[in-house]
Image 1 (cartoon, rainbow, N blue to C red):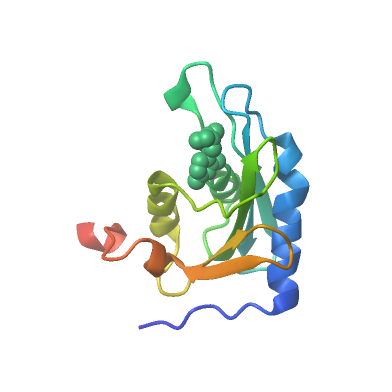
Image 2: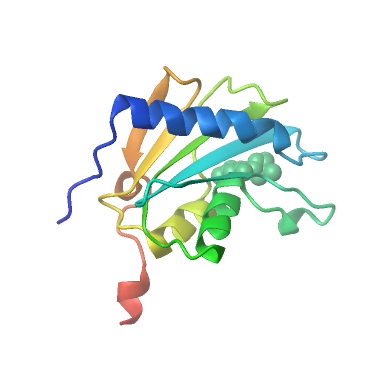
Length: 145
Ligand code: THU
């Protein structure tokens, strides 16, 4: 069983700051619920993402998937952590846990016991969880091997 990635407080807070910085870019004319995400790659690079809604509601893309798809399409596949923040009108009044689809997309590229998800209300108020805690007994690439 792999150990969880250990993030320093500085690394965690820098990632959360990146998620808050991108939050205003969320395209949310329907829900007005802004979400920002920042994905830390094993090589230290960071990819951010926001939710991008669509008049055909199911075509919406969540912030976490935007960040992951940006990274994968740039050749990155090794990830350590993702920070997520957001709320109505861009105010992070509460934690914003990733939806089930985003958890499953994380599962494709990340070891559940190692990958960290940072749920943030601010740079100082956040929860750190592993993907395994958020998505236990998950189905992944190994199940098809
Ligand atoms: N949303 C995300 O961006 N990430 C999540 O994991 C939860 C939900 C977005 C989708 C939609 O634009 C809005 O939040 C309300 O559901």
